[in-house]
Length: 353
Image (cartoon, rainbow, N blue to C red; front, top):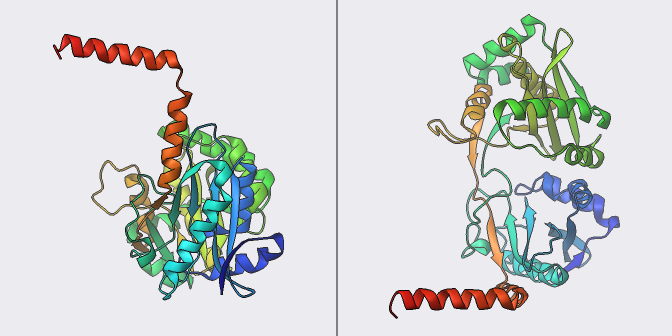
């Protein structure tokens, strides 16, 4: 009989093994990632789907505490289900019902789900497409293997620039030391300032490294004559190494430090037994004006195959949404309502109604 129960710490190893092996799950369903979200202030809901005593699926959802009358929870990379099984719809409904019950104190009106599916599964049909995805719905996956094979699959310009960086003497080193977050953040900060994008505060990355290092993540730094020019943070989960964050300084562009950085990461991940390098965000050629366009032109030099996924879907609890609207209306001061009624009255008189 199928049951949904809260996941306990004793389930951690089994859950992580299930998620790592699942083709539509990802690192944001890992226990370590849920610890990171807890450090960030989120309420974490860990739900397991059991057949008898066997853990066979489930999902971890995150809700950020808010004083608003309505809130949203997210389940990135999940739920973890056999989407082609005859009872997949039943399992999905059971998980949603269990989450709804568990989140009753959080005023959650929407549960946003995003398994890594290339085509819409039957249990998700009819759910509205989310206005914002939890993870990039398009990415570039590079198959890892022998060095010669990876070089062969790269674009000629990518091979040339990676080798040029080595000839210039660019050196790349990996680190699993959480204390290197300060050097890493400096590179991100300078990159954000130069390129004009928003960056999370350093506290975010300190919490991230505290949760994921050393087993599930690492830094890499590309240096030229002792100066750090580029840096990356990758997350390792299941068969995949994911490039999650990175940046580079606008110095010595001729030495191609970023090419050296990613070529190092590809080779290192392959040697460590990983099968895929996920560049985490990609748009196809011709997407001029898209914020990923310039980065995508760089990423495609390493070869790889574009992947398009279905993106996020929203499960809306309509009764809770209505209750939230009523609560919000009741919280509006009487004076404001009176002023609005008077304003509407004046508008009608001016229109001659």
